[in-house]
Image (cartoon, rainbow, N blue to C red; front, side):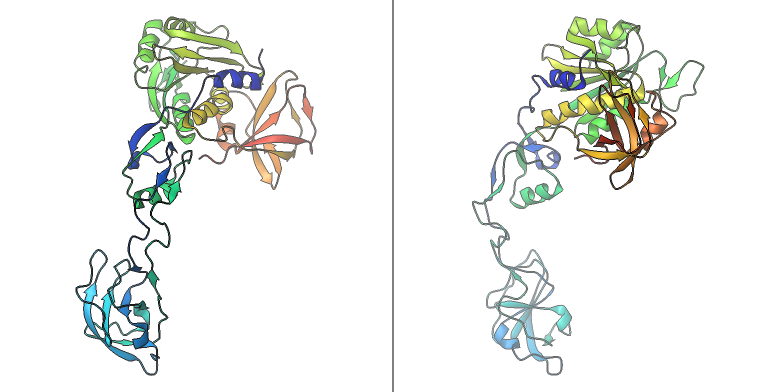
Length: 404
């Protein structure tokens, strides 16, 4: 029986970031940049107004006050996206909107709030310093600046800058495409009326959601019955469009051999036991002419989820080129006693009580208890060699509350 760490290392063997491809900017969110990006123009690209107001000469409004406003003649009106048709001369002003180019002759902008809003003449009720309310060309980014480096995980903030410097497409490590299949003749689609012996398929929906949260492009295949030909067809259909195939069910001792038989025909997949609770039966390997990686998970839903967290999520993040590949783990104090099998690492579902204290959740820690899993904010890790922890014991806790 392998340890959790040894099995994770085996699963990660040979896993590398997906080869860079060029994608439209609109598809790059969540991808890792595979090139350095330099600015072809400055940001801002021209002097522009930071306020709605009036472009003027600061000397003309130096004496303006609420009690004795300065009157200027309005000679033009400039919205964003347009340029003034005339320059600002002594005694004149140009009405200007936020983002519009600063007209020639003007050296500041007076906010509309300190004027009467006039359109023919305007009364200025306060002075303005030289350069007031003007965004200067290049004050944010200079031409040739490296605005982003290869290896950056692209988020909304990065996408905004890349768009601003005109990049309509980028070379990135794409998000992996993950095909999720659940096996079992007892599985039916949610919404189907259940007959005795049948259960609603929850695993595939859970795993697709988990894979997407880990940054993958995941899609679900309808449940596959325990039939070798049916499962072979379902897997074969995914070989041309998946970077990773993820299955649940059919890997425990005593199970029908459908999963094992099919994968042995398509490639090399090894099945083994891992010293963990829940989630002992596991399998991984590669199939098809393109050696598509496969990870097989147990059918019990909590076992499947814990296994995903321990083994699949690190694989997805590695394929994306994202670090760290493991979730944040921190020490916390137990509020109650807990028991664990001596020779296994237990991943108990828990929640934070206050500060750095945790407690188990749900009606038990069985591998079928979805109610407790849905309440979990964290996983309480009880290491191998420990079968009892008293209240107040310090344990490692894996935080499940955030993804990126």
